[in-house]
Length: 165
Image (cartoon, rainbow, N blue to C red):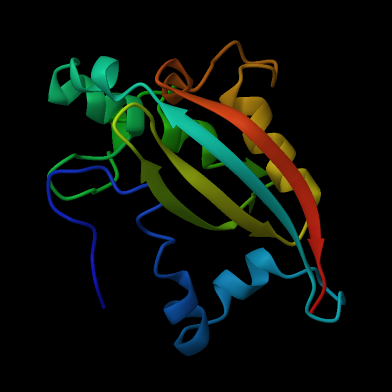
């Protein structure tokens, strides 16, 4: 199995291999993605993000890691006091009434000489999982915190979809 390239942040690095895991694993990825009793269907969200990599890369590596919530050399999730409450990982790793609001996600980088970004595609068993993550990212969840990744990346498009089986 291919792993993220060392020295770069790999978006959703623990979930990028979810399909392989879901096929041979315990089914957690499929449970996060498929609607219960939905005959194999799922809710999907697609987005196009544009990155300001010049500004992001101007930050010291330790601050970049704090923005993302992962180490840069090996994409290991920060732990304890090292994990800022406004990091991308902290804002999107959500539990409601003790239930993790997991989604199955993939991202695909794109770019040319002037624009860099990624196409993001995710699947969930409940639309509310997207909503809670987006509310926490954009600082409208009521806790006063905003995902620092939004200082360096802007979603320029986004749609919800229903994907039948």
